[in-house]
Image (cartoon, rainbow, N blue to C red; front, side, top):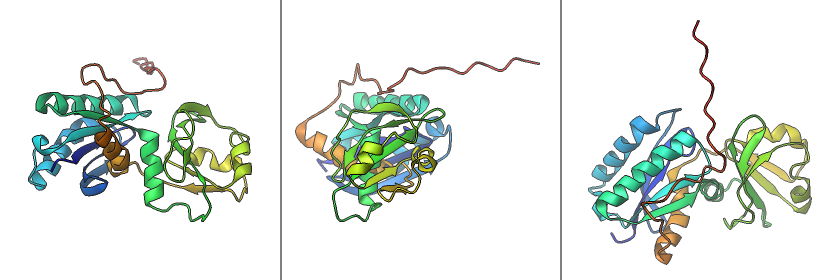
Length: 232
């Protein structure tokens, strides 16, 4: 069981955990419910380990979604992962949330093009803003993660080069702006921990681990608390 990894994904409203062996998923649990991370995550982890006759000590590492994404969700996921790693003496692996979405798109064959294409995973931010980056059809990251305000010309240059798959929970924001462009493909995608398995397995093999004591999620933007409503 040297290469079993516990995968934790909490970057959006979805909360999921999975167990992988190499790049194969052994088991997974998933819920898509806002603000359920704090009450659900620890239960899911305990259940998935027990159902597979494992403990955290049987895992080679714990992998967690590092962001960008929900401030609260990322805090819950990373705090839980760090606690498990510290208590069991296991290494911590971080996986870019956008890379997870791109891998899910590849796994599910969301684009049927026979030619190489670009994957643009998008995480919904505020108003017309998304967190995004570009990936190849093989999952290679081609650009830095950034916060992008969408308009009708946001991807003109990329679409001129060939097929582009827009996916993730922020992709629907761009769909009305792009019009009838045959190179633009849109496919919905729910974020699942199983999409972390390839990056996590590669990092485990290379020994690319985070410093448990100092690791923090990649929020991309600072958290801004909403103003409380005035009491009547």
